[in-house]
Image (cartoon, rainbow, N blue to C red; front, side, top):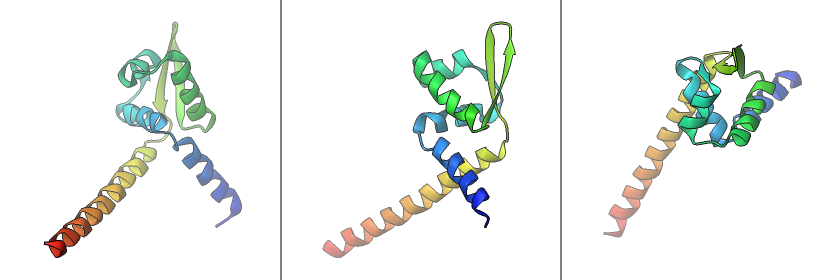
Length: 110
């Protein structure tokens, strides 16, 4: 795999490395939203939300559209939602493994 592709992947994962940014992407999975809705739904202060949205814009994860004095955000590519869905499945699989192991350990100690 070319180094350029590895760097690109790493930069996207760096942008996704904050729970608030993942929450923003999950909010946008069903379409564009104005900034005020994103801030309200995630209980973000405007300055904090602006910083997270700036990171997502800089990595070309979200697109913006201005209408009057409102700015709307949307995902540039819905495939990112699939990545997050796969990560959820990965988490659930490992969580199930951990629960099964815990059950085995508990059964052995009784």
